[in-house]
Image 1 (cartoon, rainbow, N blue to C red):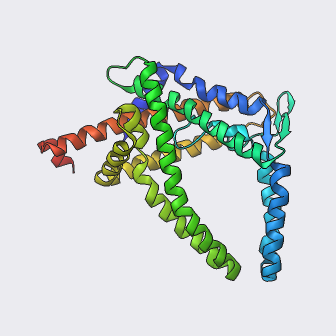
Image 2: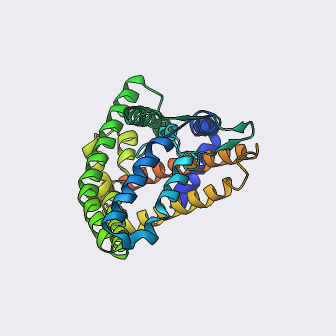
Image 3: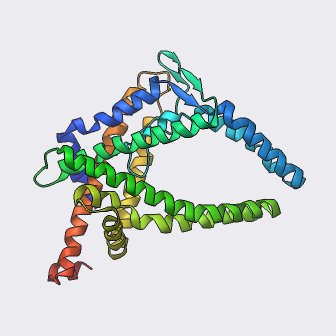
Length: 317
């Protein structure tokens, strides 16, 4: 784990151009137009709250803060931030905050006028984000290979297609899981808000248990040129066989990303010092992605040795 993290930081230090896409994306989200859904979604949220209150007035104390919470979220939501799309996307410091102010003044706001425009924008920026994310992951995968691999337009097109298929597979899994569970939570919320909160916590653990085995699926696509299903299968196998090591590696990545992300956001959004945070976040995030590719290759090498019955691999298990 330590070797992979160190190698990831050394790789990005030697190829600093790898942070270019995250930096450009954050600059766009900072100074570019903010496409908001504030005026479109707020009446819908208020109507839902009113309907629940009419059915169960006892929830008034809890639901009274829901419109205010959504109002704050919608003020900072920027449809363009979907360019930092998951599960394969360019990391961004600004995607989660969408600052309302910049060193040049207030950010330019544009309200989306209809649900058709909102859905169209969601799909457009989401798909474009997957394309940009695919190119970003591909660049890191090629740079972390030994020896490094040159760019190929044909291979890049294949990787983009596989990225779309992987995102579609994750979407299907999430819908199959979330649709029935959301219905159950909604019913429990009408009966008892406390029961609904407990259910949300339990379902969050279940969702993590479902998705963590797939965490290295993009690495199979970009590093090993595997199809989506093969990459997902190998990722699940690797996580299952190396779970203690994988859990420690993922924990280290999350702690570094979240801890440093908090540090980069200390500067006011109206200060040019935020640019230091943008560059720092791009460097840390890219280094962690590079480390994950190095770790993946090491894990897959070990699994191959284990399948062949080599003593070194069996000793490590």
